[in-house]
Length: 362
Image 1: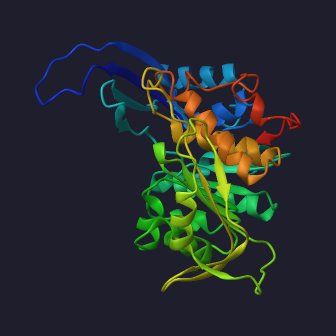
Image 2: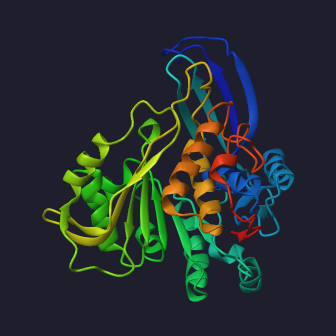
């Protein structure tokens, strides 16, 4: 998704039939993939985006903003007479929540919009391919065309699974890495707890190396598959392990942190067992006076994960880095205004000895 967000901040969310005055207003780019790739570009990657906009003023603004941030728009489709995706976003300054009203663009992207030669060129020299999870039916078919070509070329695939939708399973079956919203694992697997659901995800998707669930102010959880199964290692109930690890988290720390279990046989009752390790990441505790807007925080997190994968960051540092990037972004109105650049001094402690890998990302 590549969109325009119309953002207003209000002292408190209006009641039905209320008329209230906004405290601030901004128009900026939005959309899950658009936000994540903008974040990746500011961190030093070279992203390309495949999406569709109309030839309206909003479509023009979307393209101009991408180009200003260093996102390659060569493979964007511009529909003559179409209208671009946009959202109204109301940010409640009192509760620190936001409400989004989304209007999809028309016509949606279809497989015929991307020729074989364009698809081939789009995937040249690519390290990762990333798909967001807010696609309409026709767009999912287009995404699958790209994903299958990437899979044939052995290019790793990152899928952002936001909600349970038709045909998303086809995309997930091609995924190498999955990052999902708090509600997705349980909804998709039907399992009652997040730790159990993550075990189920890895069992259902044998090609996936890790699955991360983002939990807002509660941080994130990651289940990483072990490449070499150690059948001699002790079996651990994943829910009990989660409870034990959660108690060991330093609740006094205001910075984003991460803890990891040892590699073990992680068992979920009635579901199965997978060899791997569980990682828990905490979110930065942002002072109320600095917290402005959480719009796009999950997209910023994913953008940072893309950077971490391209620069071979260890998982523990990746989760801390991604949480830090997301937290920085919450200090400004909208999904993109607060996204940090790689030179931001707040990121420096997490980037020591990291190569500045100018990788290409789609």
